[in-house]
Image (cartoon, rainbow, N blue to C red; front, side, top):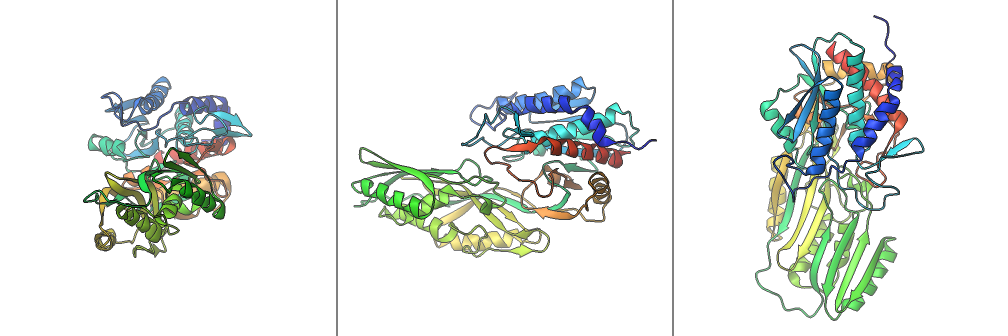
Amino acid sequence: MAEINWRSEIERRKIELLADAQNLLKIKSVLDEENPLPEAPFGQGVREALDYMLQLGEKDGFAVKNTDNVAGHIEMGQGEELVGILCHVDVVPEGDGWSSDPFGGEVRDGKLFARGAIDDKGPTMAAYYAMKVVKELGLPLNKRVRMIIGTDEESQWRCVDRYFQTEEMPTLGFAPDADFPIINAEKGIWDFYIKQKPALAEEKHAGAELIEFSSGRRMNMVPDHAFARLRGEHAVEITKKFNQYLSKNSLKGKAAFEEDIAVLELEGVSAHGMEPNNGVNAGLHLASFLADLEIPQHAKEYFTFVKEYLFGDSRGNKLGIAFSDDITGDLTMNAGKLSYNILEGGQIGFTMRYPVTYKWEEGKQKLDELLKGLNLYTETLSNSVPHHVESDSFLVQTLQKVYEQETGEKADLFSIGGGTYARSLKEGVAFGPLFPGSEDIAHQKDEYIDIEDMLKAAAIYAHAIYELAK
């Protein structure tokens, strides 16, 4: 068989690929748990995005299946073994400050802008067209190839949990939802709350009353906005102090005075929660400011904890749980959701990304012991154990060969703190789409995918699918 020019095959389908990607990006597939329906458990937009991909697959002659409206797959080929490509069509909330419609799919300067462009709708469409190329070329395969589409990756992974209750586990596979060359190790992910017990009785206090404090939408995002309201005779003075704090720390925000209430808002910089140091946590900054005010003791305890144990420390040093290994690097902690009100007390929602050799049970016990003395406690939402595929596996060796042939660059292996669907597989790795040196703006405003990089990734995926399944 003549050698295939995979990039040329993708280039022939460029206009069609881009149009389908734009249509998918225009669907606001953000989790909506307030309006669940049997036919749309995670919201109408999420279901619409799933349907779009399945209908595309059906139109192009693939075998498709919807699994309880929370996941689905698109399949081709014959054989006992199954190669999996794990993608997702849900996206995080758009946030503020975009230069264009976050669900507009606008093209400018060779880039496609939209929420989900790089995480993960653009890569999903690139992988889909990779499958389409292999199918349309009529290449002989000894294994089936299945794109598995999830709809809750940015939250609790209920989609793949449900999917693999009844559907076949691929023999091996990859997730196009991270970086090239190859990620063969992913940190563990512990999502949890640190909560404060409610006040036993209403406190009489001469200072300001903290009515409300909130920051953050998701645990896996660095909060880019924080808000607080305080009531009392010192409210005017508080607004002055807040403006001084903003100036001293080169932060953006605003303070207003409404009757006897001070309203404070602070802006940060959003980033993916796997590396909090890439952003500016608005919630931690505002909490640090509030900790120094004259406020009731219960609120004081909450904000003092945030300032003394969390502010300026994303590695768990102050909590006594810092850890690092040579495979996956540092343990990281992102305080993604913070809140306090006078009726319920305070809480902080975290995503902790911990190394593959970290003993999670021991770390949790150590943290619980510390918090017990501070009238705080942990509440676990989920814990996904670390994932590691050996470098000498058929999967890794094959993908290394393909990447080097298509790019002319060495296919080094590395690890991440993010969690991709690759960890859902017994033998799975994350494989692109972000090339070395490219800007990573997943979960940030003005998210985009470079169109040439998307085409290049699609060619790599097509070549990889063929080599894994032939």
